[in-house]
Each structure stands twice: as C-alpha cells, then as structure tokens.
Image (cartoon, rainbow, N blue to C red; front, side, top):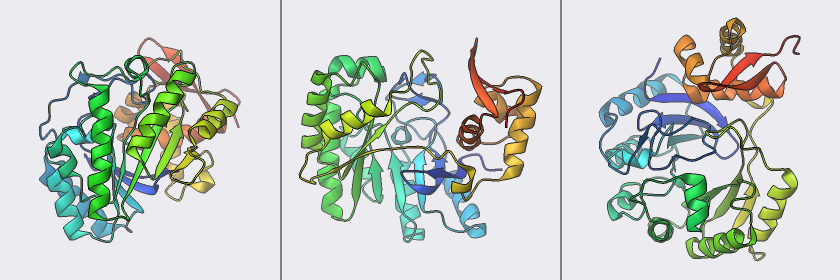
Length: 323
C-alpha cells in the first residue's frame, strides 16, 4: 500500500491516470463549495515541502517497475499540488527518468501569479488550471479563497503561464476547467466575464464540470444538462480558437480497465454494517479516497448505494433490495 500515490483511476479528462498526493488531505488555497473531498481544513497560501519529494519518487519508481505505464501521471490529490515547494524538483527528476510518460498538473491556478511556481511546472506536459468565476462576487461565493489571493492576479498569472508554457513547446496543452454552479456563475454578467478571461488566457480547451456527488455544501444540486449545454455554447468562440466541452464521469464498470471486483466488495461489505463517509471507508479498507470514489460512482449509478447527509457530512449506505 502506497502513501502518496493512488490509482490508477479512470478519468474522462486524462484516461487511466496514476495520481500523486502532493499535500495532506484538504490543504488548499481555496475552500470550494462543490469540493467532493470535503471542506478545506488548512486554508493557506504558504508553500513548504508538505510531503518529501524523495519519498514520492521512491513510490513512483517502485510502482512503475512493477506495472504498465499509465496514460498520465497526475499531480493532484486532495489539495492544491503547487503548495508543495518541491514540485519543481519532482517534475524535473520524473521527466528525466521517464520521458515517455506524460505528466499532468491539476491545479486551481491560484499560485500561478508567482514566477517561481510557473517556472517549477514548465517541464510538465499538460496543465489543467481552473477558473470558476471571473467576477469577485462569484469567485468568493464558489471558491471561498484565502484572504491573500486576488482574482485579477490569478487570471493574469494563468495567462502568463500559458504563454511561458507554450514557448517551451507548442505541443504542450493548457486545459481550463470551469465548475458550473447554477445561479452563481451562470448569469449573463458571469458568462461575459468568463468569456473575457478565457480570451486573455487562450487555453487549448475549456472543460465544463459539474457536481456529481454532494460537495462541501450539501444544498448544492447538479445543474441540468440543458444549462451545461447553454453555457458551453455561450463560451464557444465559434472560430475554433479553443474547444469547449462538457466533462462527464465514468458510470459503467465495463468502461474502467482498473476496476477490481474485490475492491468493490470491500467497500460494500464496509458500508453494509453502517453508513460511512469516504474518510470512514478509507480507515476501514486502507484504499485511497480517490480510489474509493471511483467505486462509489459506479455503485450509486447502479442503485446499489445511496448517499445521505449526516452530522459529519455525506454518508454512503446500502440500498435494501438494490440491484
């Protein structure tokens, strides 16, 4: 069992991806209302080597010596990966040792205003920053940032990074993620501001995401597909400058090459005794939270499991007589 790496997990964005946790669970610059990992417990913009880079590299080398190469190695996890001050060292060493394996950085983009952060991730192959709102009100409501962050500086930082990144190789890609929260970043004012920000950033793709399971604020609901399609059409430049697409999650176990029946059974057995949160399931099974979520997505879709709101957040329980 590894401490820092998890998966491979399936992703509509990256295919079969081997994930790396760069910071402890929910150490982040934002406290997003939709985050399926739960509320941020350490809201910070302070960078340090939260997890030792040499230990992470040791786990990666061990995994890759025993398993086929994934489609991507992704620096993501349950917090903001660029908070780890050793991220540049990790990327440089990894790309020197495994030049044939693409490396992606999934970041909320909030620290890209810093020249050092931008420089540290230039050697990666794909960077996926997020920008949920280009209006101060929407940014505050959706992302609940650390007080030291400034939205205009964030947008300028992502724009600078895109230019610097592309200068190293035109083949490198920047995919901008926007998480759609109905009634907040779907107003005409918000859409207009997002279009303006996207025009500055000029990403290769704009990917629209939405709530799949309850987030930090359980009152939030998934937006209807008709709304997602309207936002997609409104953000589409119409000239092919960038692609705008709606990201959908895997629901069918047959689509997931890394789906293991024994892991599903372990989760079902754990929650058959009593309803559990993803953190509870992690404690019982030892599986990584993102690995657990892969199975819960399928089990909920198959109507074997449902989620309920409890005093500690979102719990999963067996549906009696489920399929």
